[in-house]
Length: 89
Image 1 (cartoon, rainbow, N blue to C red):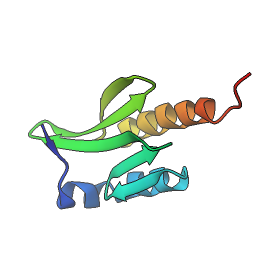
Image 2 (cartoon, helix red, strand yellow):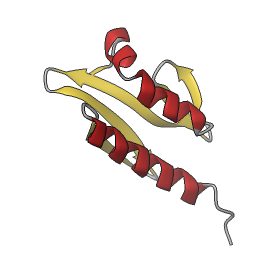
Image 3 (cartoon, one colour):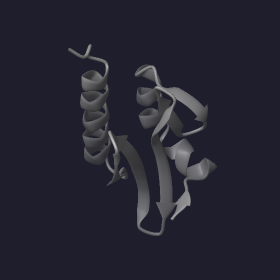
Image 4 (cartoon, rainbow, N blue to C red):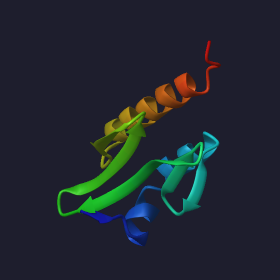
């Protein structure tokens, strides 16, 4: 599965804008890092657009073609980032 191209990312600009609000580092368009590790990037194929999100050591691939799928991805990322930013005891 190839990385998402310019047109696919342009269609997802609202989703990308939400990612930028979470203080992630966008090293190249649509490729986000958290604490110097790849956190989120996008792929496309004939089935649609997918997001790969690194949650600890696992990578979760989720479709992001609909508003509901966008919301699910935002929630997954938001929850993970909130937990990761909590001080460790």
